[in-house]
Amino acid sequence: MIVDDDTFVHPWNLLAIISQQMADGSVDDTSETIIGHHWSGGAGFLFAPGAIQKLTSRIAVHDLTWNAHNSSWSTDTGSTGHTYLEACLHRMMGGSWCYQHSDHIWGRCAKSAGIRMVQDSNMVQFCPVGTTLWINGKYGPNTIRNVSMADNSTQSWLRSTMVSCHYMDRQAMHTIYDHIHDTWSPEKQSQQQPWQKRKRIIGGAELRQRLSTLQARFAAHREEQSKQQLRDGLLAIQKLSTRAKLVRGGVHRSAGTLNNLINKKEEADESHE
Picture 1 (cartoon, rainbow, N blue to C red):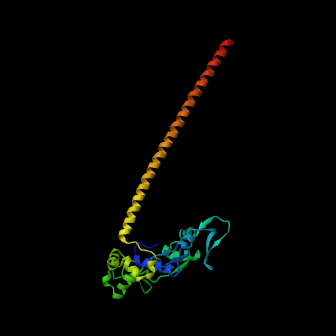
Picture 2: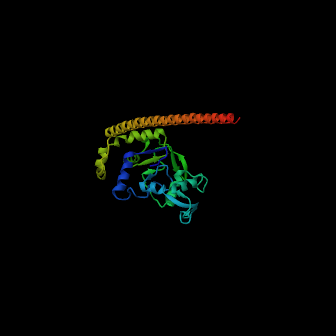
Picture 3: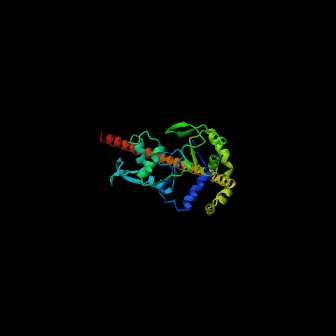
C-alpha cells in the first residue's frame, strides 16, 4: 500500500477489506487490481500482487507516446524493452504528465497497463477530522482537528469503517489513534468477521517473539557473512602473496640467466682476441 505521509491508516479495517476482497473472489494473488481513487490518491493505493507484476513487466515501446483515444501506449514490437512503470515515470519527468502529482498519475498509469482500478469509499481524500476540506470547488481549512469535536456518526465511522484518511496533522492523527486504538484486537475482529477465521491472526506478544527471532537470525547471518568475508579476504591475500613470490622468483631466475649469457659472451670475445 502506498499512502501520503499526512494519511492515517486503520490497520484492522485495512485487513478487513483485504480479507473481504479475497473471500468473495474479487482479488487474489494473480489479480491485476489496484484499490484506490483513480484521481485523488492521497488516501492511498492498495496493490494486488498481480498489479505489481504487471507494472514491472516489460513492454515493447517505440516512443512512449500516449494515445488519448484508446488510452494506451504506442508500441513497436522489437524495440527496446521498458516496463509500464518506467513508461509512466517517463511521462511524469518531462513528458505530457509533467508537474502532475503521483496522486493524479496512478489511475492513468493503471489504465495504460490494463489494470483494474477499484474505488473504496472508506479511503477518504478529505478526512472529516484533519486539516483540509474541499469546499465549493476549492481547498479550505478544516476546523475539526480533534475527534471529540466530530459528531457521533463521524466518530463511529472512524472506529468501525474508515480505512485511510488523508489531509491531517500530528494532532488529528493522535486524536484518531486515541479514539480507535482499543479496536485493534484480533479476537474482536475474528468475532466480528467470520471470514477472517480462515487464517489465524498473530497477536502482539507472538508478533514480538517472531520479530525477536528474526532479529537474532539476522544478526547470526550477518556475523557468519562477516566471517566469510574475512575468510575470503585472507584467501585473497594468500593468493596475492604466493603470486608475488612467484614473480620475485621469476625475476631472480631471469636475472641469473641474463648474467650467465653476458659472462659467456665476454669469454667468447676474449678467446677471439
